[in-house]
Image (cartoon, rainbow, N blue to C red; front, top):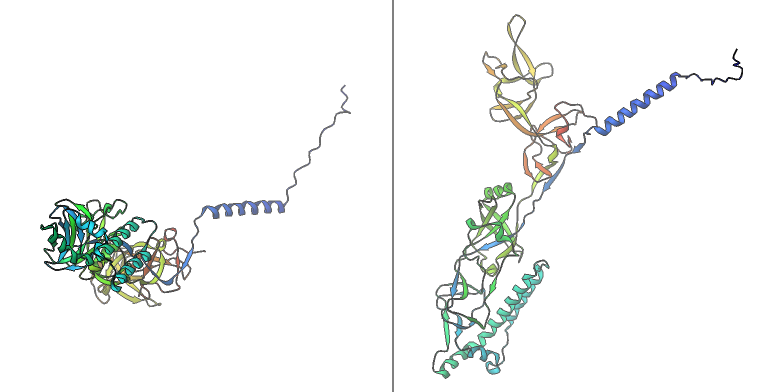
Length: 465
């Protein structure tokens, strides 16, 4: 017989569950579920409507288009200019001379021409040119430094040449032959001494590449340069009418400008303003260009091809709301004469034709919210009406089939704790915000509380922020 006196059996303590532990476990699981649900749920955030305005980016770099003619050189030789750049010449005025032998160039470089001095008006012109350059200098556009250098050199040489002009005749007289040819203007206009290939450019020829200043090349025509027969001698702008073309990426803005017909423009070079007539063009690549035409100030910018301008557009003011709050919703459209007031609350509604179990027709007043109106129709809530149902004209037997629908742009107002659609009329819109009319019959008012993200709610949803 086996001896079990030395065998030890481990005692297992029974599991004691009490009501407190069960309640604590249930609460823990419930809280965990709430936390997970909260983290995985899109939260509805409200937005307080405020008055505001939107200002679009209205500063552009435009391309100046003028009626320009390149006048070719009629003889080979060294050119010397005697008309200041930006000055108007009449038919028959002396513009430049051609020195076939280079004797005039040598004469200019020696002391035979005497001492040259600049008048106070000449010095004032140079100071104005230097001041204008320093005020608009951009380190990213260093090519402007070279343009400024050529411009100043040309201005100084042209001013100095006035003192030499009276001695030119002596060179011809002493030689017995006409070594220096006088070249006169065949047309009247504004003289400039540069060419860039944009002289015949029109609005219909515009591409985005024309606005790339890195690829833009401007050739300056300078004094004492050797020219061949037919080379560009100078350029003549023959009409005071001119235009500036800007590249507009926002098609909506381009349409707005065309609708305005005339836009006030500020020239950043001198802060002057002028009104330009608007015309637009879209090329085959889909790029939109806007042309602003002027009838004055051409001479001020005759040497500039790229001009910085600001469009002085009126800022749209109203209620400022985020675009994420805007939603489009469908409504039934019914004639106004079918809408009446009834019930104990005096709310607006319609007389809906209904049928009992035996097929007998009767009318029932159904209150419905009006969301917008035209001169003859109301936009009614589609949650209480159905397509194909009939409404009865008050005090009449005329019936109207509910079928016509239309959409409205609006937001969800949550002032009363639920999502209530309110129609809005957008005045202006950018990528983030819209400006809408305030104090409209069926719209928003300042300080209204709306849903920030309209995609998270439906009509009449209760809102818990």
